[in-house]
Amino acid sequence: MSSVYDVIIVGGGPAGLSAAIYLGRAKYSVLVIEQEQFGGQITITAEVVNYPGVLKASGTSLTNNMKQQALNFGAQFMKTTVTKLELHKPIKRVHTDEGLLESIGIVLATGAHPRKLGFKGEKEFQGRGIAYCATCDGEFFEGSELFVIGGGFAACEEALFLTQYATKITMIVREEDFTCAKSIADKVKEHPKIKIIFQAEIIEAGGHDKLEYAIFKGKDHTWRYDGDNFGIFIFAGYVPANQLFKDQLELHNGYLMTDKNQQTSLPGVYGAGDICDKVLRQVVTAVSDGAIAATSLEKYVSEIKTENSIETIAYQNTSQPLENKKDDTFISSDIHQQLQSIFNKLTRDIYLIGYIGSDAYSLEIKYFLQEFSSYKHIHIKNQTTNDLPYIQICNAQKEPLGITYHLVPGGHEFNSFVLAIYHAGCDLQPLKEDLIHQIKALPAHTIQIFVSLSCTMCPEVVQATQRISLYNPSIQTHIYDLSHHPKYKQQYNIMSVPCIVVDENKVYFGKKTIEEMIDLIKTA
Image (cartoon, rainbow, N blue to C red; front, side, top):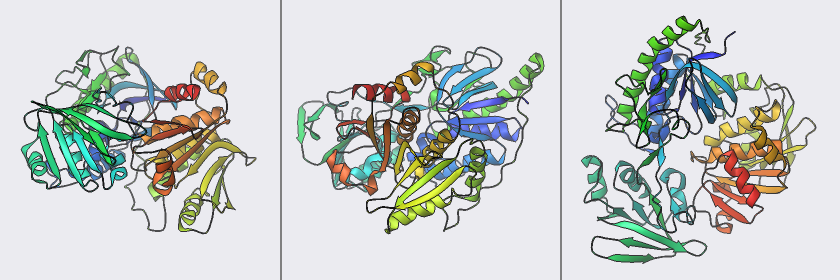
């Protein structure tokens, strides 16, 4: 049986989802790979009102519907990190944390990530007063005065979102006016909590253990702001996510060059969405790119299969419409079906041991674990604790494997928890030999990772670190939902997630790859 897909889509935002819908409907075998959150950057937008035919929707609800459409047409989805692409041959090779995947066609819909400005103090105070995601970090600034840096659509959207937390917001805009649609710019200008300073920029931020001052430069003067309780959110555009293919494909200013059919400089490789060199980066243009790339690939895939006598994975639509989650369950029937196919691959028994008390949060953890008791090789055991509740992942002998969840693994951390069970219960998909050697050589450390379940950057850190623990159990990984462990916010002065603390001493912020986590642990 072939293991080659007709098409693999790298990136699960609107462009990738649109391509999946069209390819699935045309009955091609298609796999969508996403390392963070299906839906992409638009999921941070609370209100989408300019998508044709949709009067109003949140970014999350809009893209959830797109994903469900793709599922209904037979598309498959995988949450993992792509580590390498080989694009020059008729069969493209996609290396991931879950192993090697192959396909005839590729759609690159990798998007872009927030741009950092590089001013003095930006790196040092990231997570200590400087942030880049209002959805992830806004709640940490309840009752604070905030500065929002930027004058585009994202800056205006996020400034409006942050008004629910801030006492006052000052927007610092380099241009003479906003660079986004007048409709949203007018909302910002009319909001009583928002002050706008045009033709200005931030040049420095600093303090001791936390952010204490910021220096701004205007058209005619420079001024300094001092405060004990303020924050800076930066929304200064995006950087194309081209690391996987920048040495293989033609780029312009870092963005993919594509023709009218969305084909890149290599046959069978197509681009879609914000990663492409284009005038307008909006959901409507992203889904258009995805549809064009998909329909162009239909012809290409058929020709290559015939010319090279390549057999691919047969199209098979076994999906069912998403069922509503019952009020008394954590996991919907549809998700249970997906988990069944994942956990059927387990080859070893795993114990999930819940340390619970009699409080409501303990009962929530208890009921969450019960929903995993029906799967082969997964065993549930509860023990009493007088401390805050937590979950330990253990082997068949009930020995801890170095991974402890001090939370109910919902939101974006549900997939992290599932991956921890999967990797613990079957042979690990091998990392590069040099990485494994580095991991096994690490001395004992305790890693605390503080997350918010709404954060899209946290899962990469969690998944990388728990993988390290499975290769080297002397690296103890503890994952905390900061909302249930507020004492740590003050103890480590946490103003952004993900936050990584090594041995209750050294504090780091921001998402990290497994290579970056290894280097971080080495130098701790």
